[in-house]
Structure formats: structure tokens, C-alpha cells
Image (tube, rainbow, N blue to C red; front, side, top):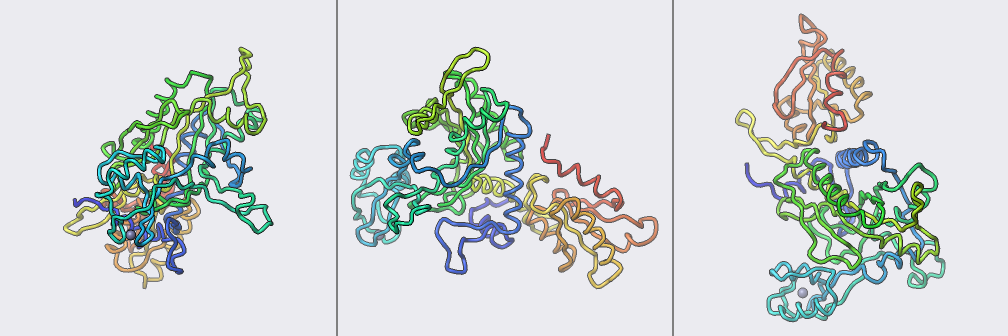
Length: 468
Ligand SMILES: [Zn+2]
């Protein structure tokens, strides 16, 4: 098998309606992508599996969906208005903006966005002869400056001046969890230790969005925040980190494509931070999910800035404290890219090459396809329609497919990861085999005859939400 490249994934996503460039008919918009009919199914299945792991399979987790717009002081308290910035430099010749830390890394100089402007300027100056503009090739850049990534809006402001009182789009979705910590404690049986899970939108003025859905300006983040008593972070942190890594493996991601990597530079309040990395096609290992030990920073800051006491009183011991927080955070786009890349397989069946998405069955965007063997035989079409309607009622995402010969239909379904193809043929209508259909398996390509009356029970076990 040849090595899978990112362009193979991009091409499949576009060709089969998983992901389109945002605003494509207007020439496209940088860093924006739209999920098509198959993409939204895979995305929703991933969200459902993630939600099940945290909210349904646990009794110490609560779900949340907080508003996108938040009181602007939230972003002062979180540190985003002052510290949420990437270093950029502008090419003096063509005005292309580059992200300084990434360009330095590309030439083998260790740098990251958490360094100060002065530190980065120094590294930049030391390496000027090696850094050239990715667009025009010039080696003439202006000074390094930190560019704040928060996106501003005029929500609720009618002055006409967006700078007067900007309301920000969330730079990260998790802030909504901190704002509702007290609400959840006051209105549910939640007792520390417990967690809150949320899938929410975030927006960043990325200087150079790139690598398809890996780095975008609009994203969806699946976050958990786990609240623990002070200094009870270490042991739980190790377990959460391991659980998250294990989840990907349990969900079918190949072990060799996953690894843990500790952050070299920590933000000042963090006790520890690790990334679960995935080996993306063409990009290599890079961040998939972050696992962060955030101490008491978040609730302390919001207590201070809001004037609301966010401390917690232990109902048994009566001890009062600001809870410490252990966070997990994954961009749904990155999760999508990891799963579709890991499933993408090129193999050969009977001398014929095929592309097959070997997604776990419960994640597949289409569960079953239904075909009449021949589309010009009304008796076959009628029976096939009957089976199609029955299965669609049960599984939702069932595809009618009567285009081209059977071999072509199988290839088409393989490419989008459909686990089973059901074919209604003449044997369905008469003889000993009356009332049976052919069920063809995506991975083994084996075909079995199954009674129509047993189809739902035979298939539904295969699509159970969890693998275990
Ligand atoms: Zn240039």
C-alpha cells in the first residue's frame, strides 16, 4: 500500500461530499470549511461517541451547551484580551504575513507562541538569513509583533464603532463551563470531584490557516473540565491522560499513529500539559487533543473579575476551597481528520484496486446501502424499495444505490465506508431462497444470504455505539 497523503484525504472529502471549501462559489474563504451530507454524519457520530464516553457512561459528568457570546470581561479574566496572541512578521516586499514561531520551527529553531515578543525577535534576528517569504522569496521582514487572535463583533453595540465596546467570539469554548460551574453545583446533585462536558464553537484570527481542517479560523471544541479538591490533581491527571489516549485506540485508531507529548513551555498557571498527538498524513505527528492541569487559575480569575464567589464547600467536611481543574480539549475538525485518515485504506480485491474507509461500523456515515440487482426489473425494484424503507426507518442513514453495475456500487460504498451493501436479486423473489437478500461485508467483501425478516436484528448489533 502506498503512503496516504493529505491530498488523497482532501480529494476524497470533496469528491464524496464529506467536506467542501467554505463559500466555494465565491472563490472560497481561507480557514473555513463546510461539512457536506456525509461529513455531517461522521462528525455527528464522533460527537455522539465522545458524549457517550463522558456523559452517558459516567455518573460524575454533566453536559452543557453555553452561549457563544459572553460578557467581554470573561476574556479579560481568562487572559485572552492580553495574552492570546501569535507572533507575526510581515514581508516588506509583498506584505505576506508569516507566523514567526512556525517559520522558525520549519528551519529547525525551537520556538513557540508562548515566548515573549523580545525572545522571538531575538531568535528571528539571529536566523534572518535562513528565513524567506513563502510567497515571494524575499528575505526582508518587518519587526515581530504579537497579534491578538480574538475575533471582535459589534453584538449589542449600535455606536457604529466596532472598537468602542467589542464583544468577542469565544477564543476557546471551555470558558462557558467555568461560567456555569456554580449553576451546575447549585442545580444538580454534582459533588466534587465531578466534570462538565461541552461541545462548543470557538473562533481565532489565525494568521495562516492551513493544512485543510487541521488549522482553521472557526472550530468546534469538545472539552471536559474536571473539578477536584486543591492539590488532588496529580493522580487524576495521569488517569485522565491515559483514558483519553485509550479512548482513541478503543475507537479504532491505530496505536502506532498515536503518542503522548509533554509541553516544553507551560503557561504560568499550569501544573502540567500534554498533547495526544496523531500521525496525520503528510503532516506527521501533531496535536490532536490537549490534556491540561490548570490548577485553580480559572475559577480564581472568574471569582476576582466577576465579584461572584466561585468557591466550593465540601458537604461532608465543610472545607471551603476554589476547585482545581483538569481539562481535556479536542478540536472536532482534528478528530475528524484523524479518524478519516486512519480509516483510509487502498487495497486490492480480485486484482482490482479499491479505496475503502475502514471506519468502525458505528461511525460510518451511511450504515447500509440497498440495491436492486437490475434497475430495469420492476419486481426487483419494488422489493428493494420495500427493504430500503424498512431499513431506513430503523437506521436513518441508508442509501439507495442503483447506479451502474454491482461491482461499481460496491466500490462506491467502500470509498465512503458503508459497512454493508444489501442486494435484492432474483433469488429474493423465488425458490428456496425466497425472502432472502445478499448482504456484502465492506471489510471482508464476503457475501451472505440473510432473511429479510432477520436483517434488522442481524445488523443492529453491528452498529452499537460502543465497541466494547
Ligand atoms: Zn513576500
